Figure 1 (cartoon, rainbow, N blue to C red):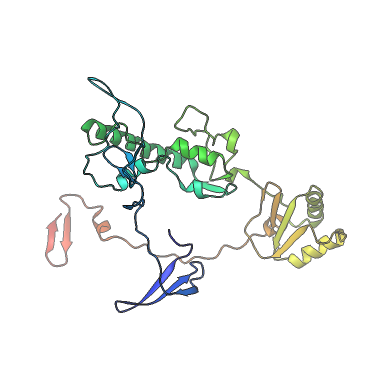
Figure 2 (cartoon, one colour):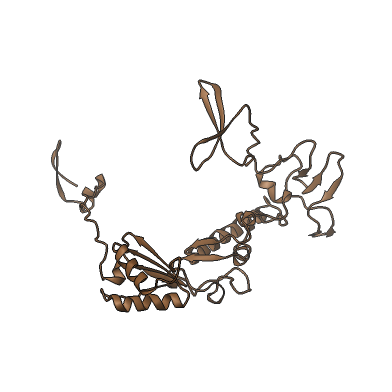
Length: 327
């Protein structure tokens, strides 16, 4: 990504007619450009003047051919200790994305680019962890096989972030787990999971509470609202009777301006309580529920092979062109 905003090229035949930078949210043109710089579509940048990496030894090489070891350490051989740098490929191997771990010793993830206070929503954390376990087990198996075959050096750096490393990044940020929490969560390390019940709390669904129902009894409902307001709760009432309910509340408590309760004229199926936030609807106040729209039944389209699903070998069938036969 070389630009903060995308650019649209309009062609007239094989010629560029206009170059315009636009807002992807509105698709509106922000400014017209005379030219743009298109950077190489690679995951790394190397030039003859800049720093490169020798894929054979894993060393940085600058323009004056000064070498600085990228990976320190020794190798043990059958004849003793070998202090030469590890060899990751043949000397004439071209540098590709495969060798990026030699260029970047500390891999990064999307979490490194997020603001510190950014909230992360995870959909079904236990499923994500299970998939990560499978991917990492497969990667480790392929790596060991490549090392045994001699196509990969044993000291070649791991080109991905492990689940434990990602879990550490997530554990330091505000996290919302969509779905129900799971007690059976683990991380690929001996340290406790940052997503354990004690650390992250319950799943998002378990944190929603139900609102008391009043079945049209407005006096108890007014007392219920007064108690919520006195306790400092945030109350939102969504009702088709907005004007009536707002007037009743003003008659009871007209000393507070603005009103501590938000009234909205609309219809929702049901309300809920989340922390100090209370959303109350006609369903809780009057026992009225938003009618479910009638849906016209749609004929299910059958696949052509479904006709033959019940046929058994030897059954007699009638073909439109060939007549009676045996299946």
